[in-house]
Image 1 (cartoon, rainbow, N blue to C red):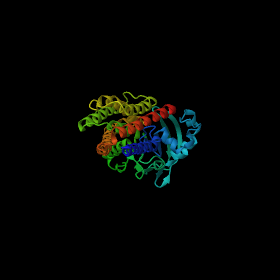
Image 2 (image 1 turned 120 degrees about the vertical axis):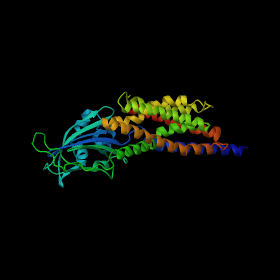
Image 3 (image 1 turned 45 degrees about the horizontal axis):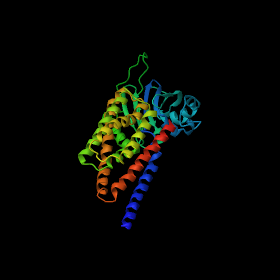
Image 4 (image 1 turned 135 degrees about the vertical axis):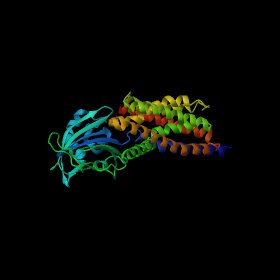
Length: 381
C-alpha cells in the first residue's frame, strides 16, 4: 500500500514538473498577443514613391534594440524622434525600391506613435525617371518575426492590395502620371497582376489566425485548465462554443473600431482568467454549467486577439476580409489544439492516479502560470 502511495505521488510530481517546464518555456512569449502584422501604402506618382508604414512598436524595437533607449519597456515620442536616423536606414532603408534596375533614394519624412501601441513611419523614394514600372521589395520582412505578414497597398495607374511575407516580399507598380501634365497613362500602364488577389489575402489572414492561437500560450493554458475536470463531450462542446462565440463578438467589436479597451487592462485580465480557472478546478465538481464562466472570459480573450490587428490600423477595405478569415483561422487552430488535448486528457483520466492528485497538480500549475503572467503584465504596463 505504501509503495502504491509513493507511486501515485511520484506520478503527480512528474506531471507537476512537466507542466511547470512547459509554462516556463512559454512565459517569455506569453506577455502579449502580437501576431506579426504590419501595413504599408506605396503610392507611385511621377518619379517618386511615397510610403506610409505602420508597425506594432515591439516589432520595430526587435529591429532597432536601441529604440527603447532607457530600457523601460516602453517607446516614447522622444525616443522615436532620437531614432529617426536609424529608422531611415534600418527600417525604410530595408524597403528596396528600384526603377529599371536603378535604386531609388529613400528619405524619412516623419515617424510618430499611434494608438494601440503602434508606430507609423512616412517616407519617400526619389527615382530617376517616371516612365518605367517601379519594383518594390520589402526585405525588412527578413528581419521581423517568422510568419510576419505585411499588408501592402500599391497605388499607381491602378490600385491593389497584396499580403507579403518572407519569401514573397516583392511587387511592382506603374507610376500614375502627374495630374495636369497633359499626358495620359499608356495602355500598358497597369500594375503587375496580384498573385492570388483577394483569395491570397484571405488565405494569409486565415493562416495568421491559426498561428496566433497555436502560439498564444496563455489562451491554450486557459483552455487546458477548462478540460481538466471530468466532463461529458456535450459539456466540453458547450464550454468551447461559449468561448468561441464570446471572443468572436469582441474581436469584431474591437477590429471594427466600435470599442477597444487598452491592452494594459486586457492582458492582466486574461492572466487573471487563467488563474481563476486553475483555482476553480479545486472546488468545482460539476462542469455542466461551466460555459457560464467561459463566456465572459471569452469576451476578454477576444479583445486580446484583436489587439494586434488594431495596432497597425488596417485599411478599411481590408477589415471585413481580415476579421472573418483571421477569426476562422483562430477557430481552426483552437479546434486542432482541442482535438489533441481532449483525447489525451480523457485517456489519462482512466488512470486511477490521475484523479484527484494529477488534476490538482496540473490545476495548480495553471493557476500559478496565470498569477505569474498577471504580475509580469502589471509590471510591464
